[in-house]
Length: 420
Image (cartoon, rainbow, N blue to C red; front, top):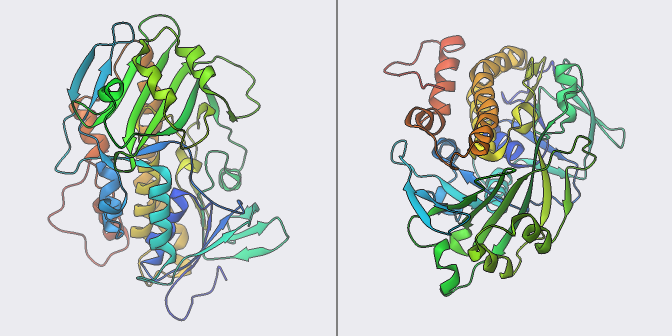
């Protein structure tokens, strides 16, 4: 199949991993008329746990793919409230915006379900086929094939590895195992239900500016509490980061309890404690945070990496989901309708040229931001230049320009190159 040209001018595409990266890439390719299958190892795929930031640069791509921000039930990010962990006093900071679009704090499942609905339902192009319980065990990048755990071999014109930080496809693309490096920081992660009516002891969660609430330790080991409402204000995302310098990381996540959170943050101002008494919307998990070393390549033959499989970063810039969505948008631009199977390897090289430097910029920037926080800096403090580079970036314009310059009949006109 990898050498054939379908009569209707569409490609056969295998996407490994049915999370946000995989669904967004599948949607982008479906809209161009390609036939896409997603292979997801989980029998029942759901996105649970923490909320995530959908920043302006990601919203540009989602809008291009036909996803309205109004369907995501997000709460706008206009700024942050920094709370002194000793006195409990608040400092409100409004963040400068990059253009007119404001980022959102969304529950992960709300974004996931909307992507799945649009990718697999009625609409432009052949609906994406989501195969659950289909675990991919190997990939042949040159031939565009993947092997499933039941022995089935699937051949396609294009394979995308969207299988996350511990990617199987990455090993076959890079040629060796590349493991996540533990950062020395662990976090508690959960979601609480917010009361429908105002509760005086929780008023600090919503008064002031719409956005994050954070406490950061002043002395001793790094600790930070971070909270933000999502799902239209019905839920509260809660994260507690702390230094945890374990050397041997056997499991990356485990269940924990409210008492464990209190134990780590018992000397913080007690105004945060009523939050822990709110009804639980999800279980409390303890996650060890890791970052992927920079890779020598994201592409090989007919296969490419997208999302965390390519550039898993720390969460301190709030760009993990955004980078996956940007990758997907760029993939869509490189594979318009009529793309021939023989064109795939060169199109993937162009994808890497458009995306790799930017993905690495965010990857290394997330590590730098952690060091900034550990040295006493405030969460969300990104200078104006950094804000423009993160949030003002237009993936679609940048990828379209690259495509036209390399593969189009004539270059785009009246275009100014978006900066990293």
